[in-house]
Image (tube, rainbow, N blue to C red; front, side):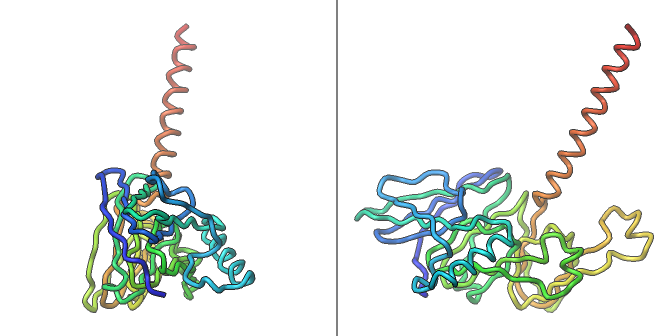
Length: 256
C-alpha cells in the first residue's frame, strides 16, 4: 500500500511534539491518546489495525489487535483524516520527556525494528506489527528487547525515546549497549543478549548482568534515558526522601 505523503515539523526540545500537516484526504495513524491538538476539519476514528489492509476480515483484525495487546498497547489505533479542502494540522506529543525521531521508511529500505513502546504516529500505509526475538536469552534478560515492533512502508513514521537520541551507523561492527537503551535498528542488524563480562564484573560492575549486542552494518538508534530507568531512579529517590523525612521526624520526637 502506498503511504500518504505527509509534511511535518518537530517542536520543542525537552518534551517534544510533532505537528503533521495533512492535505485534503490525507490520513495519519497514531497510538491511542497521543494526540495533542487538531484543527477544525480533521476527523478521527478508532480502528482495529493500521489500515494497511482495508479488506481484512474480522478474524485478521482480531489477530492484529491481539498482537498489540501482547505489546501492552491499546486494542485500537486512531486514524486522523483531513476531511476539508484546505490543509489542516494535527499534533502528537510523546508520553514522557525525550526526543521524537522522524524515520523516512523509503530511505531506510522500507523496514525498521523498534522497541515495543517507541511508535508514536505514521502516515497511513505504514504497517505496524509485532516481532518476537527468536533468541530465548533475549526473552528472559533483554527487558524490552524480546517483544519488538516492526514498521514497514514507504512513508514517514515517528518514534519517541527517552533523553537524548544517538544515531549510529555500524560498518560490520559490534556495539554493546545497556538492554533498555535501544530505540530501534535496521533489520539486517543482528540483535542478541550476552553476559556483561566475568562474574566479578556482572556482580560489582554496576552495568547489569547482561548487555544487548548489535552486530553488522546498518543504522541503530539509542536513548540516553529509557523510561524504565527513569522510573527506577525516581522510585529510589522517593524512598530515600521518605527515609530521611522519617528519621528527621523521629529525631524531633526524641528531642521533645
